[in-house]
Length: 72
Image 1: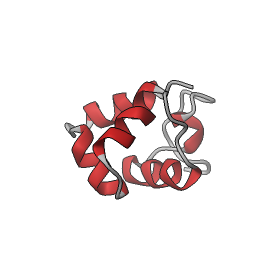
Image 2: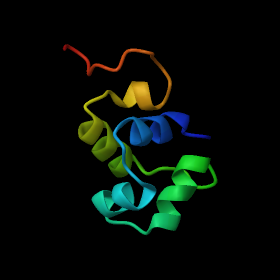
Image 3: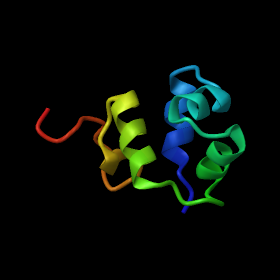
Image 4: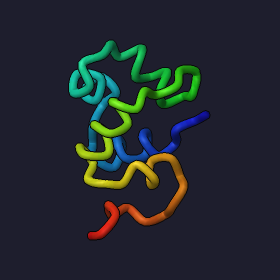
């Protein structure tokens, strides 16, 4: 699965892949593979990114187009 939204969110926040990798505590290459879909993103990283960008996990997974977390 290709996670276009994590790339879009990163770019919208003027972050580099290395910045997000540092935030997640992983190597830049690992994060790069999350973005290009060659490596599945683990749930813990997905949750951490959703919190960092203040969006729902559903938004990142393209289940919804609404950025807000449920109930907000």
